[in-house]
Length: 314
Ligand SMILES: Nc1nc2c(ncn2[C@@H]2O[C@H](COP(=O)(O)OP(=O)(O)OP(=O)(O)O)[C@@H](O)[C@H]2O)c(=O)[nH]1
Ligand SMILES: [Mg+2]
Image 1 (cartoon, protein in one colour):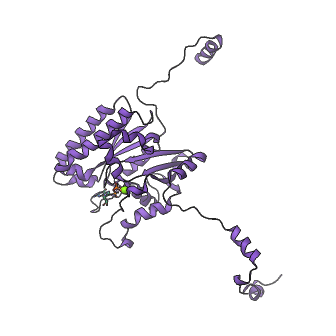
Image 2 (tube, rainbow, N blue to C red):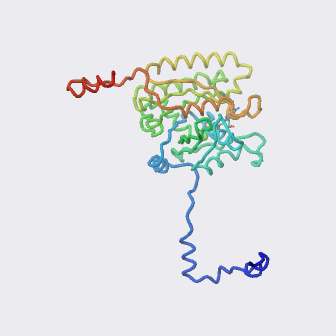
Image 3 (spheres, rainbow, N blue to C red):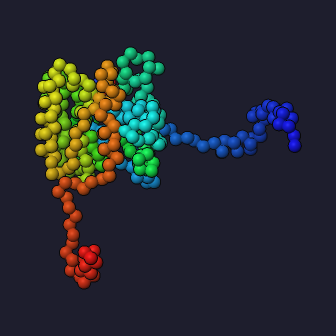
């Protein structure tokens, strides 16, 4: 048996890549594999994923500056620290996308106050992909495709409700999170406008009947830390009244739930990702039938049908 050190001279020979023959070079190049870009997923990328894996689609809908991108980036930021919402990060096809959206919130960016880059309308519809494992369910993995689109597009629904039916994330999603900008709720001059915008979007969804019958609609008020200011009791009261009004528009048609979150309070009066864990967990809940919708059983006429009935009732 040779001593390990005896081989060192032999191993230490320089490998000169320039001495490779053209055949060897092309062989090496063929062995290389192009890695996926890992930026946000296009509609085609999301479609390709859905062909081999089930994923829940979550639409994040709301006007400019409402905190949509920050909400999703902060979920990723929490997973960078470890478990979040009692869940573990498992995988993502959009890691670079998450990184790009999170960079301005880190000290390396040099910014004094954390920020999020504006989503450009030219980018169209894209998706964040997140696969999470649930330690409480034998590490069961679940995939989420979360929409990312500029708020400018959603503003147009206010004047032209028919636009809603042309937006893929609205027609395909199981969960539709309508974002209410808490900053605008705080401001008495802007409050009526932000409520009108969400009310019109909710009406457009119901009247155009363009959403999935079992879709769950969520009213998500962002930047909840700002509702702690001076106008707090009035703003909060107005918000609760508004939530009840929307419930009336949607009740008996869709499941509706409300959430108050502060994904990233710059003054840290609220803990990191306040209220976001509950929201994330709700996205992983199994599908539910729409309220009032019950499966119609066809009339049982043949003897075989009746036999099936007798067997199931035994
Ligand atoms: N105070 C406070 N500010 C927040 C919070 N979340 C987001 N913001 C700020 O709100 C601004 C807008 O956030 P974005 O996430 O870019 O909003 P958006 O809805 O994606 O906006 P568009 O991309 O223009 O559609 C940013 O300056 C964020 O730092 C929060 O929880 N509290
Ligand atoms: Mg955005």
